Amino acid sequence: MNENLIEILKIYATQNHKAVSLYLLEQSKDGLIALFNELLTTYINDKNSSTLREFITVNLAGYKHSSEKIGYNGYKHSSLVAGKPLMCEAKPKNFDTESIRQFQNGERKNPPSKLNGQGNFTDYTWGRFKKDKEANLRMLVSGFVDGRLLYIFEFPFSSASFTNRLELQLQKRFPEGDRTSEYLRGASFSYKDFINCPELNVCYILEKNKLEEYKNYIIGDFYKWMLSKTK
Image 1 (tube, rainbow, N blue to C red):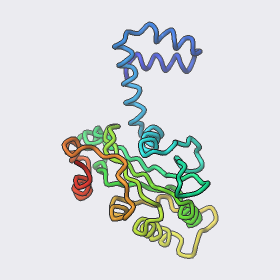
Image 2: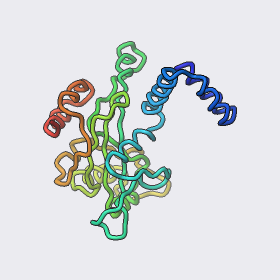
Image 3: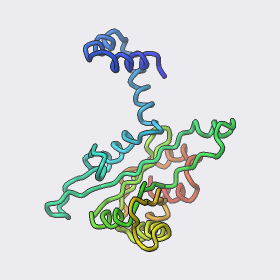
Image 4: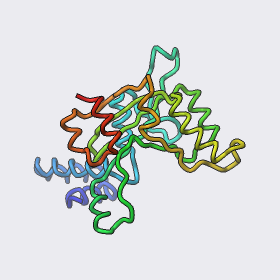
């Protein structure tokens, strides 16, 4: 981490805002640019928090981000749903290229998972599934490589292939319905569960020549499908 960034973080955490301002005023223009770039790089690639990636996904898809921990990730007003905002749930995934080096050097046991339009719902239940279906919810699936956005796809939660995938996992975990204080730890999905949705919307995707630079970090069939969606 940049030494100036370390110092400003210490000042911010232990002193007042005036001290922060004074420290920043002492920095050169190039120093401030370097500090800001380092902060953005660290934050957007944070393995323990997807907040910034979530915000970018929701915002670029045309929704207003919601910072509430309980509830959906964003909303927008729509003429299709009179009097009610259209809610969205974002599932951003970031591929860290450093993890490849770590695997090759034996610092991690398994190779990193390539982008495949994946996402999951933690601690899922039949009750939450029913609520999500009734909410007229929109899914936003996005993929990043080292913080660089590659794609955002939007589709209705109620899409048959998507809900079928979740139902199969819930049925396996709770064949007789929800049980008190028990959850499906992770209800997962991938590109196979939404690419044939008639209402699929490409909110954002890299141009073909730029997307090719990230080919090695994307599952083959998913990459080929994405090439058909970009120019």
